[in-house]
Length: 288
Image 1 (tube, rainbow, N blue to C red):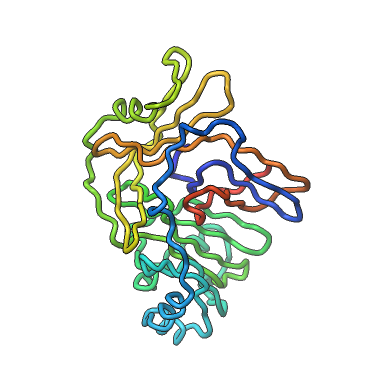
Image 2 (spheres, rainbow, N blue to C red; image 1 turned 180 degrees about the vertical axis):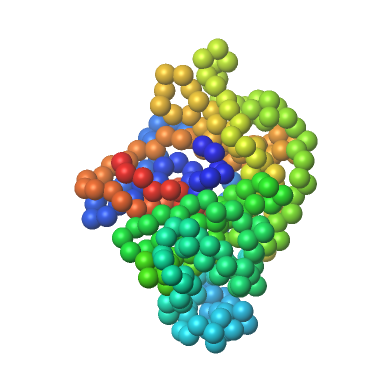
């Protein structure tokens, strides 16, 4: 699973509209999974902190002065970015509303409000724009020295009249890692299969690319340059994805690609896995 050119999602994402559905891990042995330590999971949301951040944000106050009533429904308390914001529509597209004009308008909007987003287009890449009903969903991926930052996106919603009515910033303004790996792809692939029953004659490993992995601590984030390695087993419809520290070969995270899906009805929207340690992560929606 490559990370550039697509929004990132561990496991499987589908979209459910009017359907009964459950997404669960398989009942079989998952002892080869390597989870992020519990103190590294996404921090809990503190409602008092959320309210205080909205009250203290001068950037949000200035934005409201220019554009009317807007509300931040969720802040990232460690990075100070508005994860979900919505309010009075702002006309951002003049003339014809197309994917091209919507994307250009979203880029201008982000750069014009980079203090609030805590990032500008010089650190973002457009990875997806899609039209669903009467709304364009525009997604940008944060990159650091050309390397994607895992689960670090900006999203903008613009209606078919060219009005922006929602946005979110899940970026890492303080990201910093050494830009060069200390181990090779081959060494990373050897680390990725450590502890797995792996047949070199039939099974395969493939390095999908490099990713900056943000790991949340109690009072901030640690950042690691990692290899994303795909492990595929012959004759089976599953395997593993591993993120290997490019500095020392340690597996920071490894999870099975196998999940069970039980649903009835049509599917058309994103679903987040219960055991996903980064629940805000999204991927391009698809039909199942």
